[in-house]
View 1 (spheres, rainbow, N blue to C red):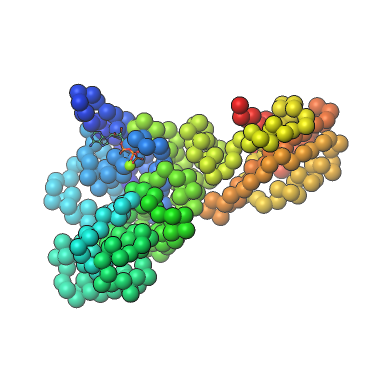
View 2 (tube, rainbow, N blue to C red):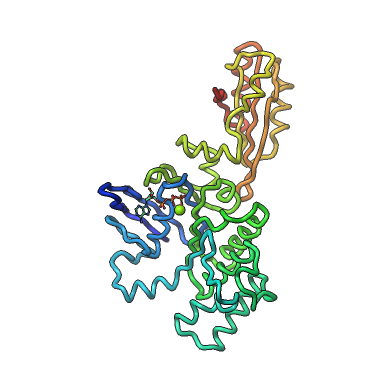
Length: 341
Ligand SMILES: Nc1ncnc2c1ncn2[C@@H]1O[C@H](COP(=O)(O)OP(=O)(O)OP(=O)(O)O)[C@@H](O)[C@H]1O
Ligand SMILES: [Mg+2]
């Protein structure tokens, strides 16, 4: 487990103090894929760089597997760092070295013998599916291939933790998917803890078990990805979720409504079930109300389906209330819809 205890980090810039991190307390379970999301300047990179102490905190402790990293001397820290791999947005490959030489670099630095290096290199090339590019130079590779080389280099030394700072932000959506699939495979097959900084909610949605949302140097919300998606509390979290799962009724649908009574609009949230239509059909059958489906969408997080549906319920107020209760009894979360301005 990686633990941040009361971490603060300040920078001095032109006589001003910038609070890059402000009293962070966070726990990252071993073996998980943990996402850190936030807008630019939130402190995400600063936080991830504290894990291997590329940055030192002004206050607080970084504890990894019960070991206080902030208290280690330089030599022990170097040893521990060898267990932590890192990949970057712009890959950080050495342009004048081949794929093979880039991947072998950390092994050379650790003084591995030639035969041992060769063996590991071949394993890694196999794993990232780039055997045929062994002797190519970085600028002969696509972005996705470069990031695969970055991943192989980070894994060379069998790390227990892999840090990814915007590792897919420079890639197109299709390549992003394949790199994320590779990271998921690394996590599942080798049990490596992956900490992933991103500003894209679909990255979180597709691979992260847990997520922390950062704003202005603070963690404003954290939990399992599914909990965060189904019960976001903070408005920033809601804005991020909105990018992948519509949380509000689109304005043009609202404008085209025949009955403009906006109090009659409800959002229904279905969690862990794909039986949305069945429940809605049953409600229509049972209650003498007018139920109009305005908009629906769904997404899947780690195998659990979350569906969001906007409906207009018109009729006798007592019956409308009964219909709402019926939904709730069937595990559907009902809210009077947040009508966007
Ligand atoms: N070396 C530094 N000197 C001064 N200020 C810094 C330094 N590094 C970061 N900061 C400031 O600390 C804050 C957090 O920066 P950080 O790079 O962690 O944000 P981020 O969430 O990673 O943003 P982005 O999404 O743009 O990468 C910002 O206000 C930034 O300007
Ligand atoms: Mg950053």
